[in-house]
Amino acid sequence: MMVSRSEAVTLLLARQGLTTPGYSRSADTSLDGVVACIEAMGVLQIDTIHVVARSPYIVLWSRLGRYDPLLLERALEERRIYEYWSHEASFLPVGHLPCSRVLMHQRDTNPRRVRLIQRMDANAELVSSVLAHVAATGETRAADFARDVPGSGQGWWDWKPEKMVLEDLFMLGRLTVARRERFHRIYRLWEQHFPELDDATLPDDDAVADQHVRVAARALGVATAGWIADYFRRPQAETKAAIARLIASGELIRMEIEDIGLAYATPDTDGLLGEIRAGLRRPSGTILLSPFDPVVWHRARALDLFGFDYRIECYTPEAKRRYGYFSLPILHDGQLVGRLDPKAYRRERRLEIRALHLEPGVQITEGLIGGIALALTEFAAWQDLDDVEILASAPPILRRRLGPALRRLAPKRSRRPVQVSRD
Picture (tube, rainbow, N blue to C red):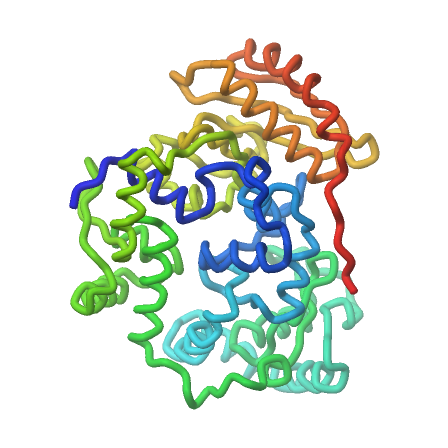
């Protein structure tokens, strides 16, 4: 079956919960809603950069609107999600736990795991000491270990030895992240946190690959083998073998994306595609996306589907940045139309947009002006900020036209988002 690129985009946005903004459709902002959102995506990438809010919180806001960010921490603490490496460091639905556990054991031949084991063997006394501390205290954070000597200034993070051991034990499945406090990891022994999971009953390697392919194919709507492999960072050969097994069992179907080529989808995609072709599913509204949102984290896919060349520039020297340190893609009516570089000033209760760039050829319509203004208003209100200020835009007229629209929406920013108790 052939689908157009426009239909492939709508399938992706529908599966990701992004056909309309969460703030415009009374999305479920409860704990159940947050967990359901992560289950639909299959994976929520973690990143620690904090300009307005950290990436995983923004990803959820894009889909839910004004939810309480503490709900993500509650979901982790209540074991409805867990943390492990997947598409980079990630939060995952608890139903994926057996798959991650297999990967923890599977990596005996992985060069990275071999290096970790060698490093732990070389520091066996320290490893035993850290494990004993975790067992005795129940929960441990890196800050529990005082640094006796100043940092070396070497390495990316210049971690203390105990922090490195905690991270290695986490990677190897000896420890897990029980919860986070101010986004700092709180570690616990794996068997204490997940006593019900029996390592003797774990699925085999093929079953894990099949599960990852199923989840990725559904979360992406319709996807090439390369896109599916990237979603959980699976090897290409294993992904293709899993696709072949799932085609044979009827759990995947072949499709073709116009101008892109062979792709795959879950069988229920036929019904969703029928709704799209009948005009019942049509992307609308304006949504700001995190740089690590599943819609844009695969640069080649964003370019193929949306014609949007996106690269996060926080790792680029400032003099070479075109769009800003932490630019957020702007999704408008199903198209990626631009990006903006935000910064929150908490004391002044102000959201500053240092630069806002539209893609070449994007027409400045009343709908676009109203959509961007509303998205910025909702984004600011979610962060408890009263004012939105745009310093520059390309083209310059965009900034001038957004000013009056933002002033009209100012009362919406005065309505504080509801906070939930941690109790």
